[in-house]
Length: 305
Length: 324
Image (cartoon, rainbow over all chains, first blue to last red; front, side, top):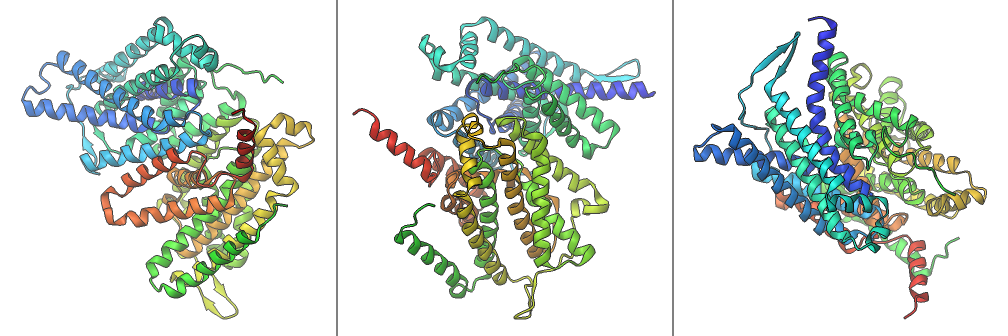
């Protein structure tokens, strides 16, 4: 392999994991855009999504249907996982964030940390503290494109992620709820005066964000084939970084930020060492924030005096 | 100056007395050890309170400040045999320097972006400690740090918790005394003014950059001291002790106790460091219950157990003014 091939290979690997980061980052950015809350429990919801996926796989295996019919199995699993994490996101919002909507700004941050402790330990108690192997429901095929290896799984991850993001884009741009979300992000008071049910729309943003994170969790499980109850923490941190990188509150920004963090990490792992790859992502983040504080696509807010 | 009523002064003496008597009555080394840990967390929470509570800047990487202090003492002690009483100043200075170096470029950013930079810096420090093996010993950390010694009476602190207990709470006491003074000093008042309204404060002649920078410096100094005590007590330091969870825990202590309120912060630190020990009986459910407790406390007291008195006053005045 030539140097260019190595480079391209790392880019391809980075793109794959970047897609997953982007899916998680969307939830951070949607919630932050509307209520200015760093939802620390979001990474945990992603992790729970992976475990729900595992659970469904195990049920199917027990029932004997196995993963024979992928065309049926994969969408069913995705649907269940996304519904499950959406429900979880809704419960978390209603029970721990909504009562604190008018509280001091740091109070919901602390409940978010509490929620992430609860979710992590609940999963640990249910599934045990050890790494769980995620069933490889998809037989891996490798394709060689000009010395760069791409697996069918990577293609699948890209297809699913991109279609989910396209669906989200459509949802935000054209549906009534989506428009309401944008209105809330602009000016929550004015939006509520226009008759938008603020509580309902905020809950909806949590549901949609959590569903996307859940989907990301399944893809993560499929890609790495082992999951652990600690996984939500680092993935969440990086996805959050991605959201900030793209300009927090900005949906296309979160997608680009996620992919970018993934690629940077892939390159960092390939050229530096895998131990330093996390430093690489954070270092770039700090540099970008210092030189372009509102992120890549974030609106440049002019402070009015 | 904040007027101190006789009753509150009596309280202070009562608590000090209790703290003094506790290890004499209770000979259990495990209990003493838990109290030492609680004391170190109190120091950390007091330091973070300067940044988050007074200056109102969210800091998500406080563990890095702590780590800088701990590793500084470890390095100067191992390589130069610097005694604890000198090392604690060097650690504090290193923590302050680190805080100010981090804040200097980052303070141009506002609010949550600044928080993310501190978070990123915290992770970078931890990963760097893990990977610069030649200096920091990598994941194994540094071993063979000397315990503090006293010349009179001549003694070595050793591994038993008792001497550390008195050391830690003496430092907590000194810090409380100094932070009280600082609170009502020109600098302390300028922090609060900036927190409430940066524009108005800078119009009144406060230099926002300098005030914020000094809050990071002082917060860093206190974390450095805490790190030095921790390192000298453990005899070893390793990167695992300074993860993101630690930053988050100290932040939770400050917010839970009441931002900007010294007593509140001390109580918050005490509760959150004792609670996991109290829940030890529940074994595997421990952290689950801990999370639930954090959520419940916040839901019932969103302003923290003891909010800052200034906030409380304002709140009361507003209520009285409101038409019935």
